[in-house]
Figure 1 (cartoon, protein in one colour):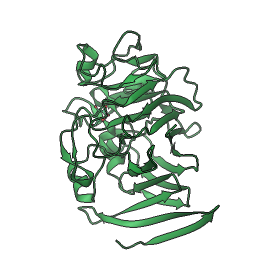
Figure 2 (tube, rainbow, N blue to C red):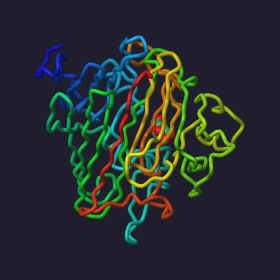
Figure 3 (cartoon, rainbow, N blue to C red):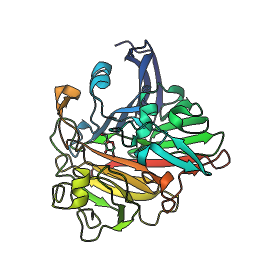
Length: 362
Ligand code: GLA
């Protein structure tokens, strides 16, 4: 495939590179590009479509690279089968009850794109958008996307920026900055499906999870938080001491049933807007350890319950629970829950977040 731009930089004795590669055309004729940044321990591919994390290669315990995010080999498979694989979700990720919310006593009505009941993932606006690559160097790439006022019923023009960076000590970092021109609700996340054993290596049920969350937000049958903040103690939702993801995933528990497994928001302990550890997760076959830190108050642990066998990378089926999503976020349906941390932002107080994914094998 033709390489449009290649930049090399010598740093110590490593050769670092950024490449931009044509990736295909959308049905409307728009071209999609793939950008790669890498260093000696991590290699990341990002698509302009959805500012999507398409590939993330890290070394396993034997020094062999494994791609730890599920996805597709080409654009047409992605367009046909993607269930938000690796995409940037916005302007409001996860669910808003009944597709409506009030801001300053004015009601806003959103598309109910999930079974005509809830607004899910901002009606796919950000994930389906072609993002502009604003700048890049050998360590980071910045993408921007402008969302006009009242797109999908959300108020305010919104300038969005996502910066993907890598560091020499194995960090992959996602920074979001969203500046509205009026007060509005904002909630962005990345929807990568991780499998720390690598693609094509079965389910993630034997991954070891430790999560820094003593509370979670229980959901109703439509996966909308009930408004309660419940203790995880003595429930399948306790990962404080550490356990396999699969240990309680099919238990006789109403919350597990409502989510068809894990598909719940967890509340990060002692949230204060600074970078705090959310989880440490280890692949049982690769010994790849992922530590996730975020400035956000919560994360959606989604255990890939709805994956149903679409053909993914290397023709391997994306079966149920072959990946997990760890979507750092404001709690779902926050605009309708005054007790949750506020996801209302203004031109003076724009939305900013940082999530750090640190990879190691120790
Ligand atoms: C999020 C939701 C899930 C599901 C996936 C996509 O993680 O919480 O319920 O909709 O996106 O399938």
